[in-house]
Image (cartoon, rainbow, N blue to C red):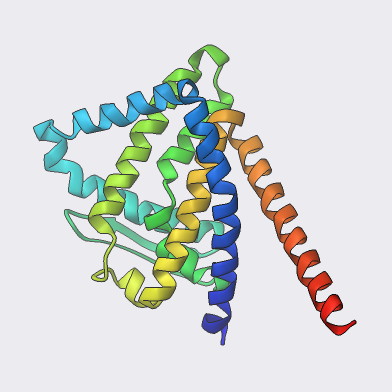
Length: 223
């Protein structure tokens, strides 16, 4: 029952995300200079990818990032963490208790939540204005790392995805990716907390507008 109810909620969240994503992308292309250091960070990651030592440890770093994301999101849903391991191409995080509805968030977070990017945004909030460009470079670098992780790790072979159902999992991942990319675009422009606040208000206002429109439509039908 809960799995069936999750489909319309995911679709609704995705629709809200799309409506806010395109204005953020439009502002991005109109103000590319505001994102120049993020672009430098992305280019830096591409350059680092050609370094032999990095390539030798890339798989372990991506596995560590994957399991760390499971762990952090698990803690956010009040789970008790029993174990954490990250090896060359394999890792595991076991947990119990906490909020039951958080299972899908914990399972699929590594595919759609760039935790290191958001960590850089937190440090950016605390930094002096003259140092912001340094964190913008790190934001670009960590975002490129997440994209690389997504490209290498996402697939039907992942038990995280198969146990939640392929259709449901990919819908959830897409909806959350759209939301998180919008937050990133807005946070470079406004700062992390203002960016999140802006997106949350925009989602809520649009949802209310849709509810009012549906209500008025129903009233007009029965009049």
